[in-house]
Amino acid sequence: MQLEGLLSVFILLSGLLQPVCAMAQVAGVSRQIALGKNADGRLELFALGGDGAVNHKWQAAPNRGWGEWSALAGHDLKQIAIGSNGDGRLELFALGGDGAVNHKWQAAANRGWGEWSTLAGHDLKQIAIGSNADGRLEIFALGGDGAVYHKWQGTPNGGWGEWKSLGYPMAPAL
Image (cartoon, rainbow, N blue to C red):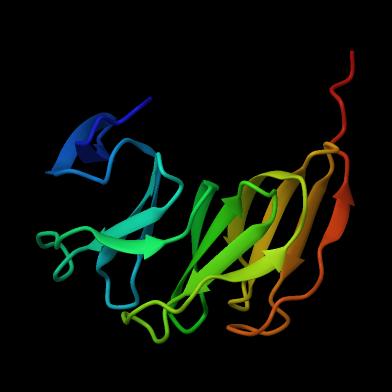
């Protein structure tokens, strides 16, 4: 689905998709969105533009209206995913055109964003983020070789280890 400038957010209520709000122009055509929840309960929406950069907007207060779009930069990004650190800071992950993962995070919960930093990797095709029971984030990636890789924070809110292979998913039995 290509979004031609207008972005709408929906929620599933009683089995029916209900519109929550429509948001005006995202720079050009958006190709992916991701949604996070700030520590104070405000939703924050991220949009990956056709130019490979990320823009975001957030609720002024929980359950309230939305601010304007703001640039988080980046270039040649192919996919985005959002995670929440144990201390409530959102962390944005992006798969670059070079097949490596980049990330940036809030300087403090509910606050501004730092600069992009690399988590390395190569020839990665897809990413997903999870949060462990102790608050450590873990990133999973599908490699160009078909194997699944992952890396995780050594401590909640801490630095990242090295990429490790989880091997190849089993082929279904015939």
